[in-house]
Image (cartoon, rainbow, N blue to C red; front, side, top):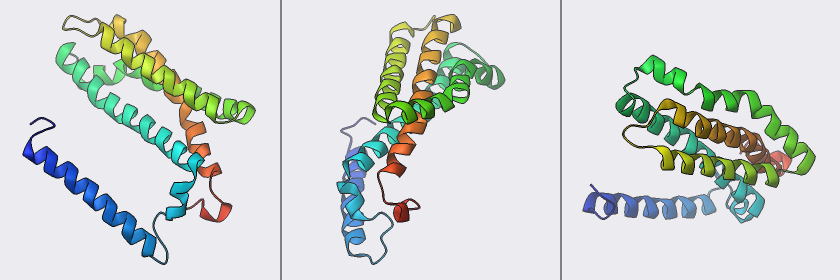
Length: 171
């Protein structure tokens, strides 16, 4: 319907209003779901932003790639899943590398480097994608995006957990 349609505008306004109500409620609750003081912790908020960006790219990528492979390339569901292996395999195989890099250099470098690779991979996909795109044109950016996600995911989670006191980790 478009970003300026009345339904979308109303939904975004309602979401903003409900977010304000949630924050006001949490400030007064004896045991808030998310203690408001955590939102003043820059490391916590930055870690949450990185985790959110990574999950948006993973789930958005699954939707986008599913559409691209099935509608544009004409693959069935099984072959679409197989075509995603260069992307997902990188996340599985290289996931521990992000944690090791974070242990050695801190969380900032692998998070920023990983997110940069994710952005570069999606930019590469945007540049090569056209109606007659071949799967071979997509393998490189799929690998790059998967490598970026694998480098950033564990350090981003560690940044969130490491930014709070031990008694608040479960929150």
